[in-house]
Length: 101
Image 1 (cartoon, rainbow, N blue to C red):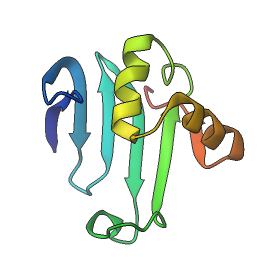
Image 2 (cartoon, rainbow, N blue to C red):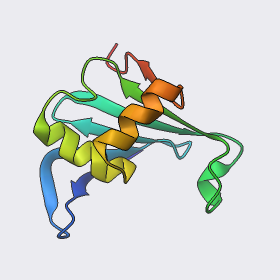
Image 3 (cartoon, one colour):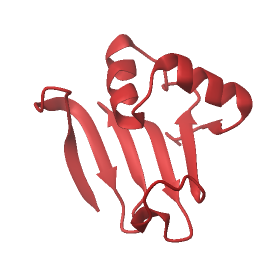
Image 4 (cartoon, rainbow, N blue to C red):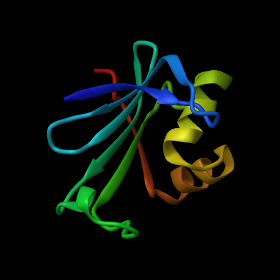
């Protein structure tokens, strides 16, 4: 398992905002003590480029949009805007679940 501070658009490491990579290559975004996003890779997707098959995105149903700070770094982690994230939730592409059990 690997834990790193998320990096801002300016290249600075941000305190209390973490990207965690597990031994299977799945990635997580954690803000303070709350898990916000899980990127689950299947079919050796972590080694593929420009292929979104085999990737499932899970957002914590309670904390995914908890604050402006959480949202700012969630957007960086997902590389998209809040509008895009909301569309993907509505379409079922992103799954809301409890990531903080």
